[in-house]
Structure formats: C-alpha cells, structure tokens
Amino acid sequence: MHLERLRLVNYRNYSDVEISFNQNINIIVGKNGQGKTNILESIYFLAVGKSFRTSRDKEVVKFGCKNAYISSFFVKNGHRNTLEFLIGSNSKAVKKNGLSLLRMSELLGNFNVVVFSPEDIRILKDSPSERRRFIDREISQISPRYYANLSDYNKILTQRNNYLKNDRLDMSLIEIFDRQLCSCAGKIYTSRRDFISKLSEYALEFHSRIVGRQEEFDIRYLNQLNLSDDDTSHSAESALFELLSKKREEDMRKRSTGYGPHRDDIQVIVDSLDVKIYGSQGQQRTASIAIKLSELELIRSETGEYPVLLLDDVFSELDEKRQKLLIESISGIQTFVTTAENAHIDIFEGKEYAVFNIDGGQVL
Ligand SMILES: Nc1ncnc2c1ncn2[C@@H]1O[C@H](COP(=O)(O)OP(=O)(O)O)[C@@H](O)[C@H]1O
Ligand SMILES: [Mg+2]
Image (cartoon, rainbow, N blue to C red; front, side, top):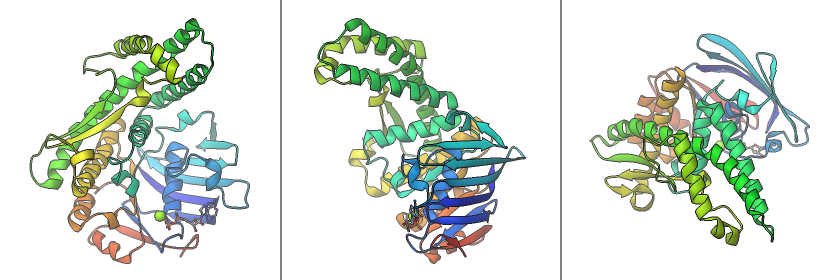
C-alpha cells in the first residue's frame, strides 16, 4: 500500500500544498517548527480519522480558518482510491472515492499506518493508559469492529462511573450496567490477548536480530482476570461479571469502576526482567523498535499489505547501529521520515528516496 498524493488546505501551518510522494522513502527535512510533523499527522489522519498528537480536531485547523481539508490518492491492492476530510471545529466529514462515510469505524482499515515517534520510544516508561492507547489504536486498524465495541464499552463505563457518584444507588440498575459492560469487555479481553500474543511472537524475532543473539523477549498481557489462552470472550465476560459483583461495595465506596479492561496493561520482559523497571535506556529503545517492526508484520499478515510507516524524528534518538537496523528492516514499505538534520539523509544512501524541504508551511 502506498500514498501517492496528498493535498492540505488550511491544515495547521499549510495554506494549500500538494505533494506527490515516492513509493519507497520520503525524507521531510527542515528546521524545527516548520511543519514536518504536521505532514505526518495529516497522513495519520487519513488512516484513523484523528491526530496522533491531539484529541481535539479543531487544533489542526489553521489559525483563523473555519475548516481544514485533506485530500489524498492512495494505492491499495493495485487499486487507486481517494480519501478526503473536511474538518471543522465541531464537525468532521470523510469521503472515500467520493462517497461519504457515515461513521469513523467505516474509515478504519482503508488506509493503514504505523507511526514511530519519540513518544513511542518512551512507551514502556509511560503510564498504562499510553500502552492501552497503543494497543487499541493498533487493533482498531485491523478490526473496525473492535473499535466500535471499545467505544460502546467506554460509553457504558462513563455512565456507570457517573451513576456511582450518586448518594443513593439502585443495585438492579448497577447490575444492568454490569451486564452491558461485560458483554463489550469479553471481546476486548480476547482481542487484546490475541493481538499481544501475535505481536510478541514477531517481536521475539526482531529483538534477537537487533541484539544479535537469542535472548528471552516476551510481551505479556496484564489483566485482572488472568485470562488464559483458551478462555473465550464469553468466559471472560462471565469472569468479569463475577468480579464486578464481588467488588461492588468497593466500587460504591470509591465511586468509580476499579475492574475491567480499562485497567489493563502490557509488560515487556527481557531476560526475566521487566524492561519498564529494570531495563536500560538502550534496552527500552531496542524493545520499542522490535514492537514497531512487529506491528508492520502483523498488519501485513492481517491485511495482506504493509501499512505506510511514519518515522517522526526518531533518528536523533537512535544510535547508528539501531538506525541501520531499522532502515534495513523497512525495505518494501513506504516510509515517511522527518528530521531536522540534513546529515540524516546520508543514512539512506543506496536506497531510493525523495527529499522534501519544508520551511514555514511551504514545500520548497
Ligand atoms: N492550527 C494551526 N494553525 C497554524 N499554524 C499551526 C497550527 N498548529 C501548529 N501550527 C504551527 O505549526 C508549526 C509546528 O509544526 P510541526 O510540524 O510540529 O513542526 P516540525 O517541523 O518541528 O515538526 C509551528 O510553527 C506552529 O505554530
Ligand atoms: Mg516535529
């Protein structure tokens, strides 16, 4: 899959630009604050219908303008498609091949991306919510149904939490919330378990390639049910229901829901140790690269094609050995790289690439 052309109108600091991309590597160079990441952000928007930097759509609309507009041509399975977005402060409209999509979940799975930024390098250090966001983002791209189900879960969870703030509570109403919540949660648990288990298999391979030897590398799914491989979504659903019933008093006292997939986390184990706690910075970087490369493979195995890869300012965070390995591993994948250093272009010597110089919202 690759992106052929992108047009941005009143998007961040771009008034109106149109860019044709190389099928292989696209290097976006410019001083800081010129609009490099804005381009990657808009490409990500095509895939997911939102930014990877903000949850407030209106931030991407150029200051002083009413709407931002993104249009694109991309090729998937040999067919050319168009995707267009009109983003206002309170509205968002998407068209695929000229036809309006009614829900964001219809967008997912059309155009796939994997983004790798300095925040992803730090993902193992961050809070569990960042890691859950990462998992949800990736599964949603492969499975729009997961996304729809997760949105339902979050809505019901908010309702339950709001209800728990009341002074007088009706047990039968809480039980209704719990049934609905668990019905969504069961599928979230098994999808996350399956995704993490596949990711872990790929990551083991990449990790040993990066470190140059066989070493234990395991991504573990931490959840309050201690889900096993053969639990079905129904058994997860009943297990959570039982847990919620048992913890109802505690939830009522705390006035919020303490159990469920919104409390999940992942743990990365290298050589029997938790990388988050015991890993060096180098080990954490290696782990994050292994995870990213695995995402590319996983999306290919699920969809039949590699997604496009967005590398936002990661080269300045990696040493030469890791830079080289990353580049060797992405051949055949359309990649968009941003960097403030011209010297980073040299890393791509011998590869097919195009360079775009960015200055103050202009492509020179
Ligand atoms: N909504 C917006 N309207 C106009 N300019 C914006 C908007 N949001 C961000 N910018 C500008 O975009 C620039 C930052 O772009 P960015 O792509 O993050 O830079 P970099 O090249 O460092 O990656 C800043 O100059 C900022 O003022
Ligand atoms: Mg940037």
